[in-house]
Image 1 (tube, rainbow, N blue to C red):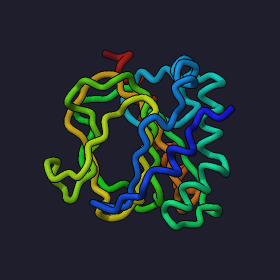
Image 2 (image 1 turned 180 degrees about the vertical axis):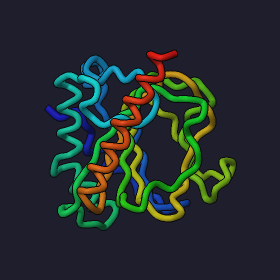
Image 3 (image 1 turned 30 degrees about the horizontal axis):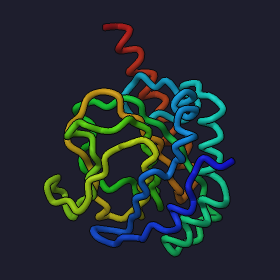
Length: 207
């Protein structure tokens, strides 16, 4: 049985202000949340971590397989008017947020579509809510997305797909999936993130 509500995705409109995006609260079905939380990798370091660095369980693996599957790809292709079949996908996960995270950026030019799936309890903090921006000004935002469990955010990457959030420190779980232009980019990013995770772990032990 699918953990994802494809009917809700189909019913969600593609918005164009400030850039092409869609948001689907409750995209992960309520009955699937407990198992996914249980099997989510125990990421205790900040930053984007390649899947596989931290051990995860079968419900989380099944979720990734659905996101990387043909039904989800077809739905995103239809919404954004793209043919994504020839592009590889890349997954990273987040578990912890630093107060220095959330800086404004448009995403790398190698990315075509960014998918964010949040996995946090009801979000009370004012920080950590992703803002979709018209400019490189954090107050110039069109939408603010709290990273509540099951919320899906998808946007088309461009040179002006600015986004960021106000400071937050603590647990902030997010799965990021990207369709990217070249497989070599995935290798480069995984190597960079793995080295970064190793260095943070080494620094923490030294302290």
